[in-house]
Length: 119
Length: 109
View 1 (cartoon, chains in turn yellow, orange):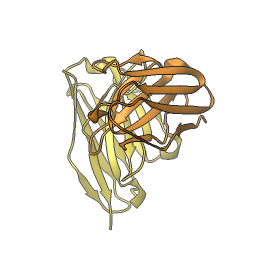
View 2 (cartoon, helix red, strand yellow; view 1 turned 180 degrees about the vertical axis):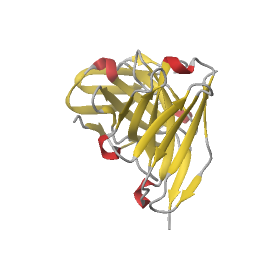
View 3 (cartoon, chains in turn orange, brown; view 1 turned 135 degrees about the vertical axis):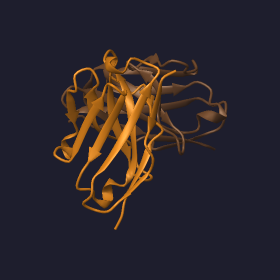
View 4 (cartoon, chains in turn cyan, purple; view 1 turned 90 degrees about the horizontal axis):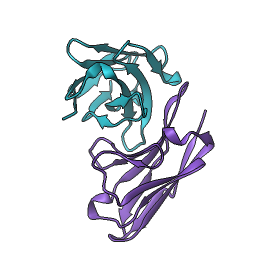
């Protein structure tokens, strides 16, 4: 069965960086993309970007351009999202999700990773 | 940039009732790229509907999606206790990626 397992919760200080991992299993990793979506406490869903696990192509949300980097390691079927220059409003649950090329939706999701930014 | 608006913000209904949720786009959206998700407290979202009207794997047939252009609807024909949750619509654009609506909360009356 398809599973996306994310790394554990993080607490970071303002200005620091965080790197969240998302290990995929149960499907051919390189046949799909991975999107990252975050959700601030009590708020809605915000798309952060997408990476092709096939060729590494990326598409980032404009508001995060320059602060976010998404990568994949096909040898371990793991996707990574790094966010730099953290601010308090980056406090959120961060989700990875699988994206089929054919229908371009988030069809399977990780369990989420809480990132807290606090001094 | 396409903006999605969902209404109502909160829908208070009883189990067994019909729920009708609306998603309106600021400009025309390809039906192929309109999806609906369900999210329960403390859980990740779950894909319900893609391509405006196709149910995702394992989704009960009480959930249905319809619409085109700028107006889309998610209907839950008879609410079950496990259906009380927040529902998000989402559209995809090649340059802008995913855009989510603000969500509709369906709670127990």
